Image 1 (tube, rainbow, N blue to C red):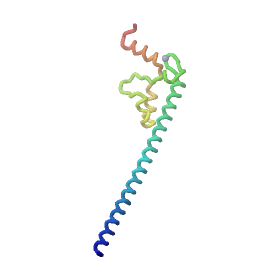
Image 2 (spheres, protein in one colour; image 1 turned 180 degrees about the vertical axis):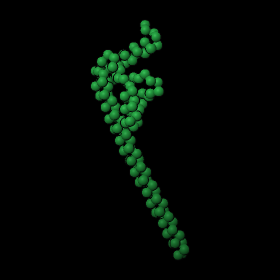
Image 3 (cartoon, rainbow, N blue to C red; image 1 turned 90 degrees about the vertical axis):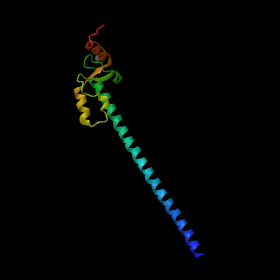
Length: 125
Ligand SMILES: [Zn+2]
C-alpha cells in the first residue's frame, strides 16, 4: 500500500516537473519571439529612415543632367562603373558602404537614364 502511494506521488511529481519545464520553454520561446520582432522593427525603422533620407538627398541634388528635382520617385542613382552595386541594394549595409556608393553615383532622372542608355548603345533614333 505504501509502495503504491509512493508510486502515485512519483508520477505526480514527474507530471509537475514536466509542466514546469514546458512552461519555462514556452516563456523563453515567447521572449525570443518578442526580441526578434523588436529587432525586426528596429531594422525596419532604420531602413525606412535611410530610404527617406535618400529620397530627400535625391531631391536636394536633382538630376545632374537636366536638373529635374520635383519627385524622388522619378530620380535614381546612376553610375558608370560596372563593379558598383545599386545604391538601393546597399541601403541596409554599413554607412561607409552606403556613402561610398552614393559618392560614386550620380542622381539622375529616369528620362536622362533612358536617353543616356540609348546614346551609349549607339541607337539614337
Ligand atoms: Zn534628367
